Image (cartoon, rainbow, N blue to C red; front, side):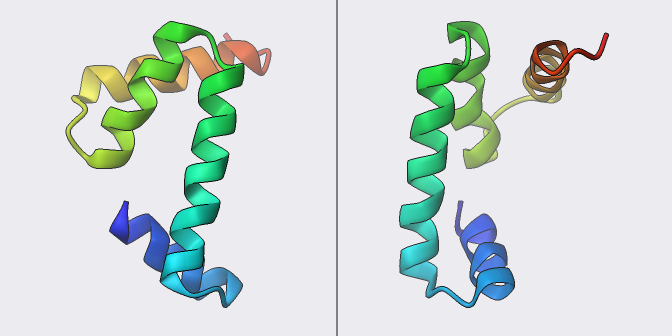
Length: 69
């Protein structure tokens, strides 16, 4: 998540600490709103411990929610 926080900080001008808070808020919101199988993959994707299959499932699930097949 540090890499993402740095990117958010660079793009928004927020401090890295504030960027982490913003990321945690967005991630929490997504996990509340997404179906459980997809929500469970978010932590793995952000921590870098998820597998390529996890990321593929996450993007497929998100694409399905957005109307893509």
